Length: 240
Image (cartoon, rainbow, N blue to C red; front, side, top):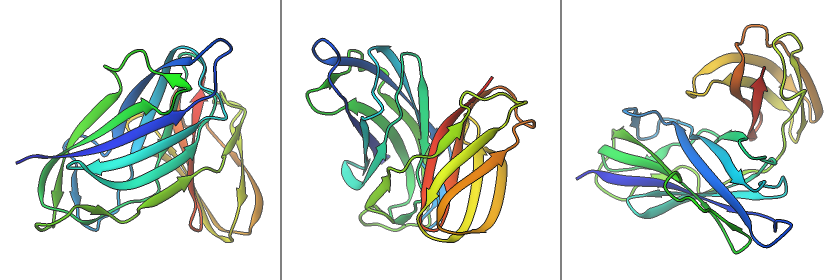
């Protein structure tokens, strides 16, 4: 029997100028891709895009709560600081590498459900809050499905300047590195495929600023990921 895996997202938001904020949150699951085959113990990442269809702004002070469920059982909680989303803005995030540490084999519906949390924001349209892909889990056995991580924090800010950027201008990435170690910067397209990678080698702790050439990329929306020593953060990039 086909199981079900759900990624439940809640957002806390500030009050709009008059009464509750109303944010029509549209959710799109990018990875794992449909029909992907994931072996127990093999690393994978979850990439999700959210679009604010309005009518109100989602403020920069808001947070994203992510609950991963499989077969109705909660597997992990994720937290991420949000960026301000004006009406028609989109933002994506990618988790650090995860893995199924245990799971039954077979197909499973892997879903992302985006829901506002608390009493300070409402979502007037619920039909576009759920996005699903059917994946197949291999190398497992009968038993409880578990993820390798139970609590994942993605709160730190990766600053991109300028953003939106142009192919000619490139961007400067700024980030406060907590612990010295190897650092890799990647650019992901809307399908979740890596289109550009910059391996920086060992980077000391402290403020990191890197210039990234964008001349190889076409105009569009991308996700920039920073992977360091125990750190993994992402930010949306628009190239015009």
